[in-house]
Length: 308
Ligand code: AKG
Image (cartoon, rainbow, N blue to C red; front, side, top):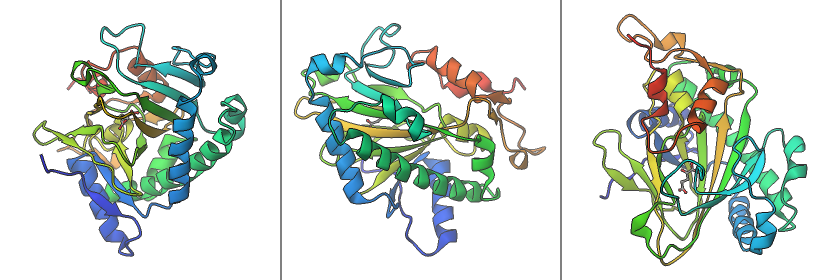
C-alpha cells in the first residue's frame, strides 16, 4: 500500500505544531520518522559503515563474542531466542549495553579499530535525541515536559546492531518476526539502500513498508510508553523482512526505564471515564516476562492489564 508513517521535521520553529504532530503519530501509528534530529549525518553513515565492517570480520573472530544469554551486557547472537523458537529468524545481531558508556565500552569489540569511538559517539547523540523526544511526547499528552524522564528514572540504553544476510528463501522466514518493543522509546537507524522494515497499522491491521529516507531516523513507541499513556499511545507490531538480493543492516537504540522504575498509567491520564488500563509494575518484572516468551505470542502488555 502507499500508506506511510508520518515524517516530522524537528527543526520546524513552531514547537506547538511539532508536539501536536508527534502526539498524533504516537496515537495513530506508534511510529514516525524524524528529520533534522540533531544526530549528524556523518555519524549515522559512520555507524552503518562500522556495523558492516564488523559483520565482515572472519566468522572465527565473531564466534568468540557469541552468547544466547540475554543477561549478558555485550553479545553477538542470532535469531531471537534460539533455545525456544521453532523457526529461526534470518538475523545475526550484536547487542550492547550503552549507558553509562565508561562502564560498558571496555567490553566492546576492538575490531574494527574505529568501532568503540564511532559507536560511543552515536550512542551519546541518540540519547540526547531520545530525551528531547521524551519532552515533546510528555507535552503532547498534556503532561509537564520532564514527566517521562523523571518517571523512567536513570535510564538504561541498549543497542541491537541487526545484520540480515542475503536469504536464499526469504518467503520461509523473517529477519525479525512481528514484535513490539518492551522498552520505552526506540530510535532506529536503517540501511540507506535496502528496505525491510514493515509496521502494522493500528487502524486496520495492514502492513506498511517503511522505506529508507535520506538522513531520517525512525522512532517508535515501546510498551512502557503505551502503559504510561494509559493506552493512548501505541506500541505497535513491526517486523523485518529479508531478501535474496542484498544484505541489510539496521541499528536499533532502545531507551529503557531503570529496573526499579515503577511503571503504570500517569495519574493525570486516569479519570472516572478513562480508568487505568494497566496495573503498576516494575520494569524488571516486565523485562523478565518479555524475555521468557517467544515473539509469536500476544502483546506482552496485555499480561499487565487491570482485571476490571
Ligand atoms: C528491532 O531491532 O527491534 C527491530 O525491530 C529492527 C527492525 C529493522 O531491522 O528494521
